[in-house]
Image (cartoon, rainbow, N blue to C red; front, side, top):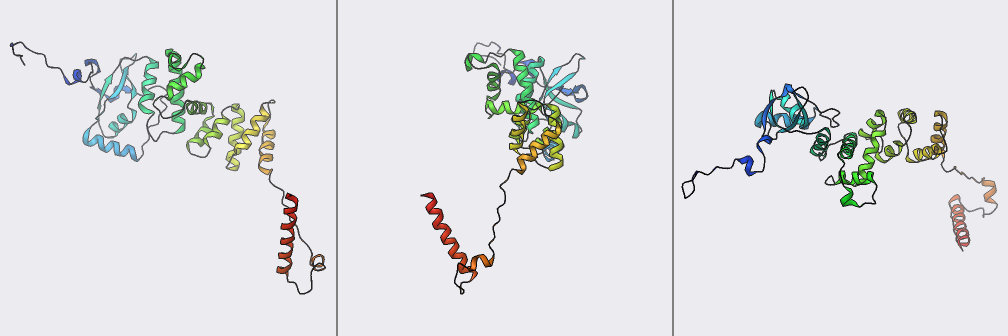
Length: 301
């Protein structure tokens, strides 16, 4: 193309117009040369949504490139796009469009978490380990969130507030999710399966792993655990270690601490001396209730 003076004009490519440099352009990469990100916290399930994605890939291909980085063996490590690659494999594809970027371990973790954390169907365990990984990565990066969040804010709080940005979660909720990584796997599975309340699980996370195993045994045997049981257990643990028998005693005392039943009966002989002979049981009951009401009013005065 030429301008009015006849000089050639270089046309901008679509990538340049969009602000994407050439090295960021997508290329087709062999799926066999891509391996998963180490300790990837997000699960890839062959559920109904995956089947829908596979069908879409069969018809339209993979529309959004995955994000990769090179490894030491001149192959590729998946940073973001595990579900798309799995769908491509199920659809019979041998290559997938990908952007290859130079990323440090910490940068790759942040990119991976940010790309996946907004998915609606995430399990508590997935969020827990994702937030934990991002927190550690940000600490390694030396993120200066203190410049915007205030010099007197604790570093742990600064990091979790930075993680919370854009997630729709409060920084305290981020902290709670991260606490779940301190649970033994069996208890974390109960949280994922909605058989253990989130807040109760967070409280359990502060308890020693051996005692957590006892708690899991108790839940398996009884089918429940109550918040007040864990609260009582933690109070006792503040005074020193306990054994499993003592823990069971604490739990049982919490469950059995109910109101003592107070049944009261009057014999016919005892009642009839206060009423005329023609009074029925219903008549006597009404008189007794009326007298009790009067007595209760006098007590309140």
